Structure formats: C-alpha cells, structure tokens
Length: 79
Image (tube, rainbow, N blue to C red; front, side, top):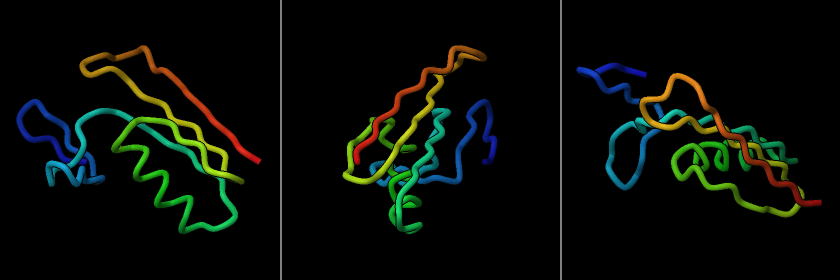
C-alpha cells in the first residue's frame, strides 16, 4: 500500500478507476488450482461481493471506510 495525503491505496488495482482500492478487504479462496484461487481472491477484494463457484470455498472480510473496528465477514462454499 501507499499513503497519499489521508488516503491509503492498496496494491490491488480497481480496473474501473485504474487506482489502488481504498477500502479494507481481505479474501481467502480455497480451490484445486492456485491460479483460480489467486484470481478470485483479487477480484473479490475489488468487488467485495461473495460469489459461488463449484468446488471453491470463499471467505471475504470487509471494513467500513473510516472505521477502526467493525469488520464484517461473509462466506460461501460449493462442493
């Protein structure tokens, strides 16, 4: 990440803006193929919306802008 003024930009770029995301989100994806897990985790950090993919387990944690606490968690899994 990099701080510019009072804004912290992530190393994950939002393709809609071309800038690093400014919200705090973490994603954990378990899949048979590492490339699929990596791509989904990055996409989830940008979109912050959980998805269902067959054979993949997903967890997403988000924090409201400006909040020091109050992390919400969502998860989905498919077999």
